[in-house]
Length: 289
Image 1 (cartoon, rainbow, N blue to C red):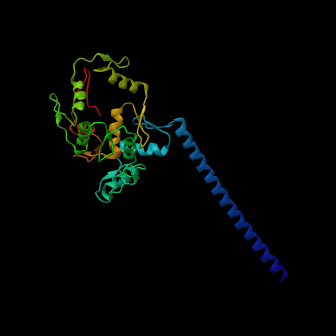
Image 2: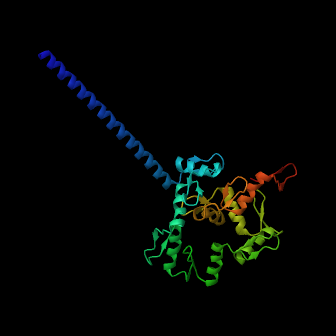
Image 3: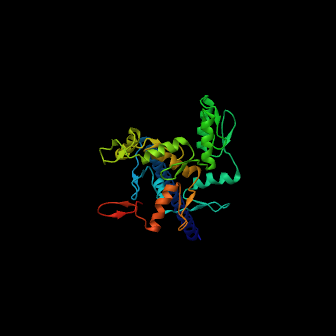
């Protein structure tokens, strides 16, 4: 009987030691995972301060501070839109864009101005609106909260929300919501372009346009998006990009349903279906993709 009792106690002690060893191994593994996660988070945080972007897109050269940022960006090239609105069926490549889009259906305005209490569907609209309280603006757009000094400027801006474009170019027929936009566009038709880029030989109508162009060669991108942080070399590129946050990609290809944020991008894409090759060279004719 004494031998049986001794054997039972040994088995119990062995079992207890095995359980304790297993528990310690699990705890060690958990602590190692937490430490690894903490180090990765610290590394990502440091990159945001240093500006380092080690993860580059092989297709377009854009770089990102994290693998996840690169993965989200690559959907631009693949056309993947995994996030679908249950209400209207519209799809998005980023979950944050879907979340913003859903506010259109719910009418929710989660971003509140601390000064006047006015609410907005997007943080970027609230940020623009905040300048109103500095006393700089006299007229406010009811759609997005943007401020203007003159009523005429507000009326011209409101046309962009309504899609009204009364100013048409007599050369190509393209229409614009303001006379100033038409005036800038007409420069593209000017034959005399005295400002030439020393890098590539391309010429421009104004020195300001040349200055913006030179940033492409230098890789300088001083204009960041206040929503996602992506940077651009000119205000016009940034303005076009911002539409992807506020409007999504409203221009759809009738043949393959791929969507774009601008009409010009859709037009370029459609040439891949039609085979149109409008850009000619002395050696070869090609389509600009």
